[in-house]
Image (cartoon, rainbow, N blue to C red; front, side):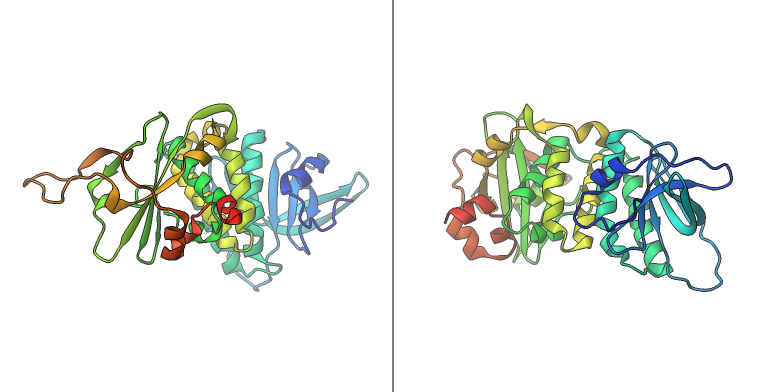
Length: 344
């Protein structure tokens, strides 16, 4: 019988152990596993696809919400299901179904990783409103995977790497841009952090005029690192697996990570998650610069000129040390690599 609390096991591991359920023409059938203290379940359908079965607190008579049909996910409300616990034992129950639409491992593992993060948002007895709120967030996330990519894989890898290495990953995720096209990658209070990566051997990066001329009272830090493709390097999916556990204490931050990744990668997500880059090279090359020390053009532009973008060579710029970043506090202290903080 697959109905024990999942505890701290990864959902992907739990899902692998679920058997295929016996088919029934009259209603959806799932083998299932009781999650945490219940009542929600992780299920496997007759085609081997994962589904989250959400139990909703009874709210009396109400209209059933319309189903959501997306390329990767389908949502159905108030579905009477047949749950198989063994070849000879089944039971009926009603759930809201959040159903993965494909059985390939890449989508399945990504779906299960996202579900693992939203479970704490649901709680043990979610209201209809709470369920709709979580479902809307999931729908937005999976809709993003149908849109064009809005950031390069290299750029996103560099941002995730910074979060994975940071002394305070939660602070960085809370400050991370929701829209990939925002001026700065991270913003908190009067502090801004922009991540720049280079694939070559020269520390040359492109900037917009606005990035190096922030509003008065705002300080900008630039994180610069070399990001090289490497067959034996760390993939984007593996970086996600490093970041997610560091923000599990706050389900909203957990979901924020996947929202930004989905919005950045769009339709390219399937191949992008497997792209690998040299983690050691990124670690040893990571430097932080005050925006004021970076070569830049002035703000006085000729009439009719706008949206200026230029390349700056940071070779002669002086990077900030650990002490300076600590003294700055806030976001700038949070981004210090944990391995560096532990050494001093």
